[in-house]
Every structure is written in C-alpha cells, then in structure tokens.
Image (cartoon, rainbow, N blue to C red; front, side, top):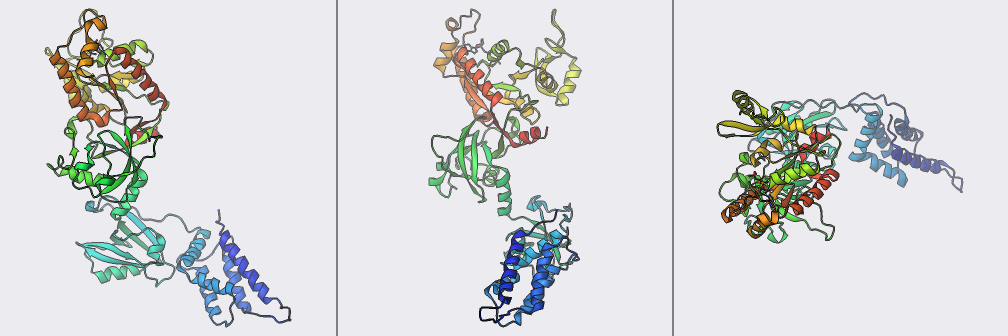
Length: 550
Ligand SMILES: Nc1ncnc2c1ncn2[C@@H]1O[C@H](COP(=O)(O)OP(=O)(O)OP(=O)(O)O)[C@@H](O)[C@H]1O
C-alpha cells in the first residue's frame, strides 16, 4: 500500500494557497507577484511527487531532492519573499527534511525491502557476539557520514557523531561502537586516513557498516528483554565496600525476585524487591523505592575473583555443579508463567531426611488420588513373592540399570544390600501422563529435574524448631503406636541438615512449608497447590520461552 505523507501534502496545500492569494489583485488593483510561473511549477512538481501513485526515480538518484534543489536555486534569485516561502526554503534545506523526502520517495517507489547482508562468521569473540549491521543512505553523493573515529588498542571505535549528519539521522550508531567493516571491507589494521575515506565513499549513496555495539547499547537491549531477576546470593549492602552510595542501596537474600527499574549503568542497577518464591509480587500497601544493586556484570566479575566475597558481603552457596543450578550465574532471569492446558508441572518436595516429606506425599495421594501420580522405581533385585513388575518396581538386570545410569537416564539412584535402586526420567514422563507427578527426590536430582522440559514446582519442607519438632512427633500426639520417636540428637541433625539445604538451594524454592503438625502442613500445601493451579508463577525465562512455543 502506498504510504500517505498527508502532513507534507497539507503543508504544500497551505503554501500553494498562500502563493495563490499573493497572485490575486489587491484592493488597489496591484498584483504583488513573488514567484515566477516556473517557480510555482516547481512547487507543484514537488507536491506531485508525493501525490503520485508511483515514483519512477532510479535507486541512488532522487527526483524529489533534485526538484527541491532546483526550487531553492530558482528562489534565490527572487528579491521579495513571503514568510511562507522563506519557511519552505529553510525546511527544504534541513537535513532531516531532506532525509524525509528521500524516505517518502523510496517508500513510494517500493524500494524498502530489507537488503542487509548476512552476519559474517568471523565475529571477534572478544567483543561478544552482538553485532549490528547498519545501512545508511546518503542524501547527497558527496555528503560526509558525520562520524569521527578513534583507535583504541588496535580497535577502531566511533568517537563522535556529528549533529544533523547521516550517522545521527539513522539513529543506529553510538559513540563507543566498534567499527568492524565498511561496505564489506574489514577496517582492522587499516591506516586512519584509509578508514576515513572508506567512510565517506558510498556505493550508489549507500554505505553499510558492521559494528559491535557499545556497552550502553547492550545494556539497553538487556533492559528491554530482562525485567525481573532472581538472586542466587545473599547481598548485604552495608558490608559491600564497593558500593558507591550505601544510603541508596538495596539488600536482598538468595531467591528474592527483583524488578529491574534502571539498567543503563554497567556496574550498578536499580531494582525493587518483590519478595521470595513463585508468587512474589509488588507490595500494594506502600510504594516501594528502587535501590542500587550490583549489576550482573559487576557481580559475575566479583564471583570469579575468589576470596573477596565474604568481605564484599556476598555469600555464595555450594559449588555450581552440585546443586542443580549450573545455568545460574549471579542472577537468574525470570518471568511469570501462567498455568496452561497441556503443561503438567511436577510438584517436588525437598527437605532433610526425617522431616516428613514422604508422610505428606502419602497423605496427599490418598486425599487426591485423581490429581497426583508418582513414579515407579527401577531395581536390579529379584521380585519378592507378591510383587508385580511395573506396579511395585520395574525389575531389570544390573547391566540394564548400569547402562541407564551411564546414559544419564536416571533422576537418582543408589545401592542397598548389593542391589541398585533408582528412578528414571522416563518414569517421570510416564507418570505425567496420568496426573501431576508428586516427587520426593534427593536434592541432587534437581540438576536433572529443574529443566524447561519438566518445569517443576519445588516446595521446601522445613523442620520446625526443636521444641515444636519434639512436641508434634511424640507418639501420644500422633496416636500411632509404631511411630519412631526422635532422639534430641536426631532432631538436631534434621534441623541442621535443613539449614544447610536451605542455604544451598534457596534460590530454587518456589515455596517453603514448615512441617509442624500434619494437619497444618497439609492444609497449607492444599492452599498452595490451589494457587499454583490458578495463578502465574515466577519461572526461569527459558522455561516460558519453551512453553510459549508449544
Ligand atoms: N508433621 C508431622 N507430625 C508428626 N509426625 C510426622 C510429621 N511428619 C512426619 N512425621 C513422621 O515422621 C517420620 C518421618 O517422616 P517421613 O518418613 O515422611 O520423612 P522423610 O522426610 O520422608 O524422610 P525419609 O526420606 O528419611 O523417609 C514418619 O514416621 C512420619 O509419620
């Protein structure tokens, strides 16, 4: 469809009207002519270009600009000029309007197909993989690009952008951008004067630049795409000696969701603290202020510099490979994902042995047999009388099981009295077909489970304090004769392991339930699952991308 430059046409109509008025006899019968017939014709010609169905100008030449130049030239010989004409001359001389005239002409002629070259393979990894290809169409053949360069450690960079020049008009070039190629010619190692002449040479008025964006450019990209992050470390701003302005700082803990408000600075971002877990949200009670936090770049460099973390107020969890969040660096990029048909997310109960995960799972399965399903483990031991293959266990040979382990098909496995036991990933897939998998694996299994494919909802079952633990687990309270009573040291062990797990895995927890009485814990879990079924939850950005594509 032909674009309608209606604003420009209206402007021309006004100008033509005012010329017509000037050509009318005044009350004293005098005709005050400021334009010759040929000049009036030039104005009409320019208007025609906008008005015509199709522009026939060849690429690289511009009928509109030629007409506008001729018009200005003709007008220079006129002595008397009306204000309207004066304004028209000024406007037609401006580089932005000239660019606009050219753009309208090119669009009218249908010369707007994308003709950018493909991205070359030999991008310098030192500068990251971001690359921009900018094609600039010069309005005049001998027009300068309007950008200066400087050479920094052998890299050619854009030093300055001149106001009004083609480089500024295109809006895609920034000071600090690294120049890689000009019209397909690599600038690496070229003398400055050769680069300058290449910059000002254009093929048919077109110049194509390959640039590696400056950091400020990259920040604006990440600002647009990443708006929320999850912290994988505790940050106490008052202990951070690097902080430029502790009064404006924001402290946070592992697992907190932060809303990024300003990311234009390379080292210090501004963020609001939304809180923890899958349902964290901005407080409606009080307006939250943004505070300064270390940027991803700042934090990553801090983390790679060993030893100084404690001093800087940063306490990292256990090693990356052992806790299932290998893909996390300083922050995890997150977004909200709503429940949707076809997406069955396993519910995973994590906690120290003895806290009660299996008891809670057993009761939930009894209460909601239709809703939840669970995996059937594999074992290399022989079936006992009454045990059914595929119901109690999948009975397989030791070799078969070792092969599955080797192929990394097991979610978790272990050996007990000379026999292998374990759960394989395909049994999680199978039980997802029946209902919501309810699983109680070892925390190490999260490395296999916390992926876009499974997208689990992880609940940490936390032990209460020692007194509550003892009270709630006493045989008289539970009314179960066979109940094992916990010794003080067992309780202490459960509480300590719980604290260690919490410290190492906190960024992965969607919710935390403290297991005091069974009734309280069950009702809390049921409410939580209702929310999980009906409300969006914070998830790693890559999960949402996968499920949005489904
Ligand atoms: N809230 C509770 N109140 C009272 N007893 C509980 C509670 N939660 C669990 N128990 C009991 O504590 C014991 C340990 O629970 P459970 O076996 O579920 O622990 P677990 O976290 O699954 O640990 P493990 O992996 O070692 O089995 C069981 O006898 C269980 O009935």
